[in-house]
Image 1 (cartoon, one colour):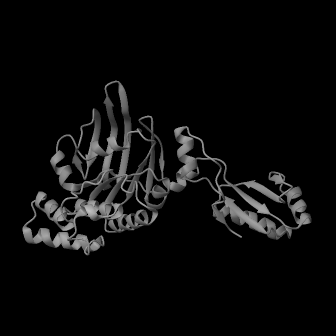
Image 2: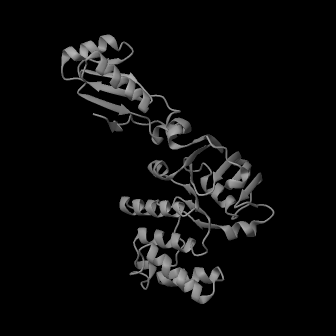
Image 3: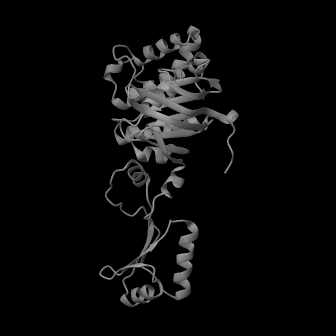
Length: 323
């Protein structure tokens, strides 16, 4: 694994703490977000995700912690941090009484862009987010997905290299959510760093290079989606047979497998890795046994989330069918 130096981190937090009265929301958490990546912070409602975003985006102050965003010390130079970031909150910040274009131009004015440069930036972003046709219409007529796209377009007017997205797709239909995913991927491919909080575990699985699970004010686990999934036991390979003789032969040889005599199926503990699958297939070939179906069951982020935050979950359906 490549070691990440502090110079290559877009966001670095050590010992981040925040309390409201006697309630500790963030209890000394550490975060390290490499530049040009998507970092996702997961956690139950009230876990402190939004508080972390508000602190790192200078909206509120931390009680303690060494915090750096874009290479700038959050406590000593918050203005430099603000110049380097963009923030899209949980709720759309657009003005419904004016048009999409006017919202964009207003944001350009707030960034003190010259009028010609502001109009150019607004036009380019409206086109990039597929809002050109609606640009002259009041935002009150926009769909939820259009409002979220406009909100993100406004965030990009100042060309920030670090963007905080706090549950950006909450309430969107599946098509709009997938469209937003595409936009986020484009941003990262251009070198932008995205700090993402989300209620959708699938979203973190799809987008994030690294994921941290926040629970009771602490980081319960952190890693890539695959690394987190490997923390949870329960992965297995299921072999199903239609020939009772082949099933009995396989069951006699694979004594560690769990039998399902009614379904003529065997369940073998496995992490679903390519190496283990190849081993099972090689064994079947060498034994002259042919399974009619091989299915891999692997834990997903739902399993990880519920295991780390103390919830329960209905067992999953098969994730991948090999044969």
